[in-house]
Image (tube, rainbow, N blue to C red; front, side, top):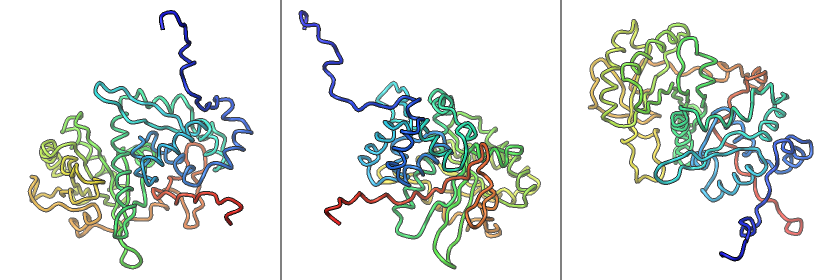
Length: 361
């Protein structure tokens, strides 16, 4: 090795090339993608645009049957520049790969809605900027909350489905003058006449905010309930039961000071209540403890997410989320205007079957 000057690139195996940004926006590349992208791929592009960033495991939970199939497909999407990726630094171990919408994926998504990419509000540098954003861990945590629910509903024996998942930015467009939730969700249980739905605003706590600030957010939700006439539960997800106990004290003090506490139902849960040995731990399990005037400590029965509305007997059923976001019953939207795409369905389309060779037909 001392006398032989072998170039490092000569030791590497063949790697498939990745399109440049200019080539990814070409007509030829878009024509190629038309024959390669499946309905599930396009769904994933819409979800990445809505929720900014997803890890490999979150994408697997949302729409793939195994980690191997997720990694293989994500590799293809990365080489086609429909998605971009980065890996945050960790002092111990390695972080999972994080994926954002790529330039070719943004072109596909914009074309689907009859928009130009600039009308979509997309810029590649802004999409990749989440890699250095101080709220990266918070955004990933919120998305993990919802993708674990999708994974639970995909594997549940009883009919259960997450039917709405709004990002923080979408919530800000709708309610930002009063309050900005970390997310909005809706879960449907049962079918037919026996079906019922539960909705909620999510406050995802990472343990960095002062507990008094968590409590002060209830005033904004009270103003929202007063202006809309709709009482929507506020779910506070905390990292530990110890922090949950302190948060419940702060929340109870703020909740009691509201003009109409019944207009803002509140429940809390902690991540360490989930079984780490479970195959798919999820916040849909019986970990939610409602906040009432009679009970502010950690005692009492905990509810699953589907049954949580039973804790508030007078709570009205949720309104139609499609009407709230400008959708009609036929699926037409007024949201195909700049920066206002319709929210993607949390239910991914089924995987496209493998192509059958002509001789096997």
